[in-house]
Image 1 (spheres, rainbow, N blue to C red):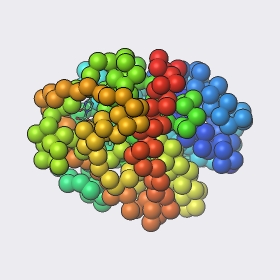
Image 2 (cartoon, helix red, strand yellow):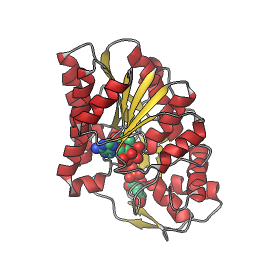
Image 3 (spheres, helix red, strand yellow):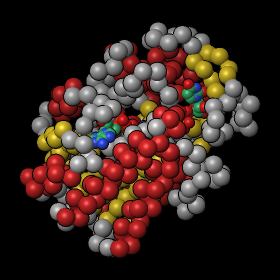
Length: 336
Ligand code: NAD
Ligand code: UDP
């Protein structure tokens, strides 16, 4: 079976490609390296010992997509390609709407023309907005997003539901990721943020490796056990394996469904710092700052639907997530 992976050179895409190839799938990657680099492809090859198709292209361009579908019999598409930085999306809303919606619309048009109607889409817990209490369930209302990035994910979910309503031969899984961290056990692939990281875990590991002086803790007056923000961190390899289960599901029938991919357990910022201190053996400095605008106190999943309907659950705990994040960062202090 052959899977087209858009954004396959990125953080989650590269881990998913490794798991797909190891499970015996044929893989074709399409990526324009907007937020990744070619060396990732060599690392995927190194880790799997297998080759795969690769097209350097912008997903907003129709012609290369038509070429991919003409040259390969693609059974299903996993669509990771997109921009993902919340703060940047507030600064550059047009770029975010253009890239994230543009990629998805052009991809779906090319898929329809090629009669390939099986799609796994990278959505996000951010679609639950500010008004739902955790644990978050797939049947809660979505929307009320607080930044253009989140709104692109919400809009794409609506677009894909309209697409299915117009043609029920499509089979679509909307995967709502919680907070992916960790890296492949080898330390050869991992998260490679540009510049100063926005997300907590890469920030912490860069402090641990000595690239940044201390961690800014955004608020300690939330209604949480220690006052700092609580999130549902999930190992990127567990997340990758969730995509294999979603592919099995969409191959087995038609429909459109959303699934949370999280652990169901929340950890605070201070718990994350302590856990990375343990994994790295280093004392980490931090400073308590004001709250970051738009942040929720707590955000964690009810992951039971994915277990019930996909037969998937996260297996890797916090200690393993931190050890693997640290191995990646310490083996690759400057990233790729
Ligand atoms: P990433 O930036 O590492 O990977 C995205 C990949 O898409 C990159 O390789 C980039 O070069 C490529 N890309 C972007 N625009 C493109 C275009 N126009 N044409 C071709 N390729 C393009 O991000 P990631 O962390 O691996 O996230 C993958 C997906 O999961 C994204 O859609 C993201 O929004 C979503 N997601 C990520 C998180 C997270 O915390 N990492 C959480 C929820 C959802
Ligand atoms: N956070 C923090 N310092 C940072 C980055 C994040 O204290 O430098 C906090 C943030 O307020 C939130 C948690 O860590 O409570 C996770 O933030 P991240 O940006 O990684 O994920 P998201 O908020 O998008 O779930």
